[in-house]
Length: 222
Length: 242
Image 1 (cartoon, rainbow over the protein chains, first blue to last red):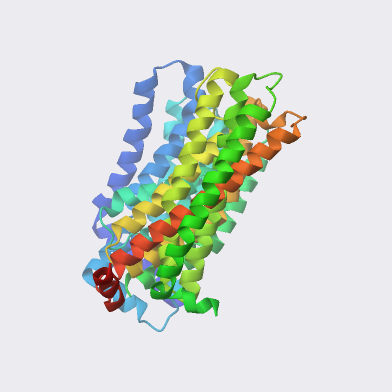
Image 2 (tube, each protein chain N blue to C red; image 1 turned 45 degrees about the vertical axis):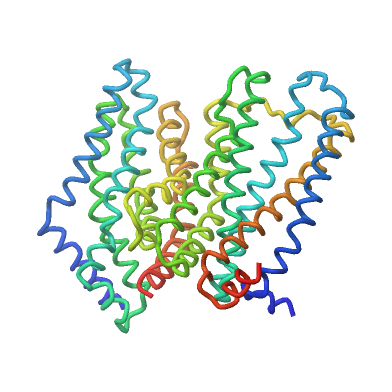
């Protein structure tokens, strides 16, 4: 089972490496969107500092929205998904592998680039560390719940827009705790509580998301 | 015995008979509730007459949350037992729930203007109500975007269940975010002395909203049944007999 999981992850990573543009575009979008906020509100340092974390998180949510529709749709279009569904390995393995590779290709790079944007928003070194830690805990949630959303919208009309409508409300806790942790650091409070809650939400998402994604895949390919 | 009515064909006439009863109950309860609310209940000491919007606001807010859970319950039942009617029921409830959510937000905004001096406050309840509205809209949009009704029902069910699990977490996170950002906000529900007549009016209105929801849901359900089973022999026969 681990073998199948690793095989699937390696396959997705290899495909992504060969279509590097797809992955990089999401990252570039993240940087552009996050930078635009500063142009929209002006350059008072206190204001920038106060909103920096929120901007990074909102941009990360939007970037996830852009990358999620491709999670299963490409495999569905070329027929691979059906083959994976009738494979002897449990469907959960496929979903887990898809989530892992999605996070490795979008969540992880986003988290690693985010401190750059944090610098633009005048965040202190402590706050940058909290931002990075929060993103490393929080972005997996985007992939885990996103898998359910991506599977639900398979074959639906205007799937991309629909995905945003379905998932963004569910991402509210990630946004609140992720940005809240940075704000706490900025005001000199220990952000451990927020980060722990973020981890708790990740745990709940891991219980809810993958089974929902499996059910949705079965429904979509019925 | 009850399971006989799980077939759309069997439930269709029953629903038709039930609608006028619930509709009349809703009307009578609403008249009673509004009478108590507007004429019997005393003027509030701090808010004056403007508090009377509570008689619409609170029942609407209650129904909005309650209907989401009922909708998710029916959807889950449909997913587990594979009954066609359950999915239709969830579809029929969703618009009513969304309307009550919108109504709660709207009356909340109107109430906020005289009491808080602004139409919108990022109050925890208001914000989570807004997110609930988004959840309803997502459910309706997902069902609308999938052409095959059976598949739409099942996909909607998965979404409703995920949403129902998330509703308390979202509410908790919003409350937390709210206290973090602005301290405890003014709470209209905190007035310690709620006069008995106020409570009576509110409960009557809540019951009216409940009965209204049932009546409207059943009416919408009949329409959905007609739309989906339009080609079935029993619908054709009924159409000819009318």
